[in-house]
Image (cartoon, rainbow, N blue to C red; front, side, top):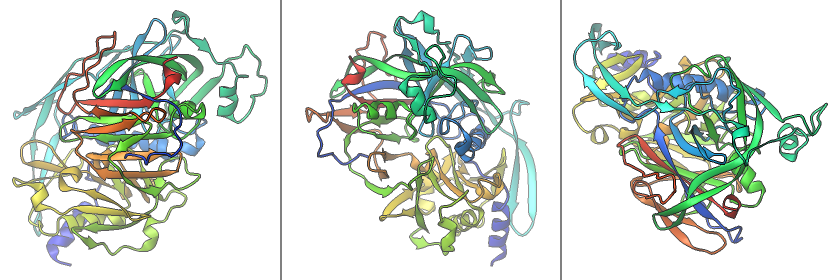
Length: 535
């Protein structure tokens, strides 16, 4: 091995890195309409703000992912540091506004309750204005400038970003203040289904409670409520009108650890996991929606769509989900870099205890077992061995003045049933200042022992693609897509197909919502629901 390559390999071994349309069913199914929520992104693309927060978010989230089998409700996203996307919803009558995390790895919708003794009233996750500050500041991290050229030469310098954030006002849900809200008792069907049967000592006056303990030691305890959810439904091409429906969700009464004290906490989360407690599963069990959801996330322009139900354009190829797994696990077969297959042992991709490949858009980065990680990085930088690497808040970054798409190779992940995931340089690198790029792959060997052999594919490689989770057929798929364009959604009863745009949907809701475009900060969440939600 050449000396430069050996030095690069040694450098990469350090923990330096940052981290669908479903086919139309022959069964006409129930009627469907489309609802719209405004969604914002916590971490703007391009490394805005403190990039260490990206890996901190993932680190906390992995505690939940790896401990999911021990979580009573099947695993919830960790809202101590709220995930990448959050939305505004309205609950109750009269309706009140709540900001909740959008999370494909979570299994219930829950919000903080009026009786909560450690719930935040404000959040720092408003719309930030980011600006580069070239002068030293005590608020900013130190960068180590290192060149791997036969010997290690480093110098220290400062750089950073300033951010002015408009805080969000958070709301505690009060069941007594809503004329349509009611507690779920432990003898009701939802509670019995959640816990696999009637609880001991249960009676009609005992509430259905839940408790979740997360990997970092934080916890939330509460009880289930049924109340009205309000949203904007799409009624035509780019047209909306108010809609509402009854859903069962958690009312968080007590928070432990950092869950209620983080500056980035929100009112709760809305989960799209596979468990029966998710909003999607509730509606599907009632025969009201297809158990299918899709998303595309535009990290270049910041827009996107999140849809529940039958998206009919564009089409996608799919790969099977592995049965009886708590997450969206798939079979990864091989990896190409620049069209050349990496020579890796076959067992490195096997699924088993603490092994395998997970698709999770709630994770920011992509994590590879150390062996895979090193081979991928060596192939990526094969033609750039003179690049100077910078340790930026423990992430591997470098200066590059050209086009990364022209100068670096495409990475292709190959899955079962001939499904390929193409990850382009502008997706696995992210800009962090003028001509500075950081790598979005993380060395799994630097993670906990439970996660070191897992391939965890996050938002960074799933962005700029339409991803479909078809839980009815137990497959997942994706296709490269122009995320600033539109998708087509189908009403399965009438056959009507509506166009939904990612940026310019106007709302006729009485709430007065207007979807003002903020580059890198706004995402539209589109839900294909049905008459169950508008009765």
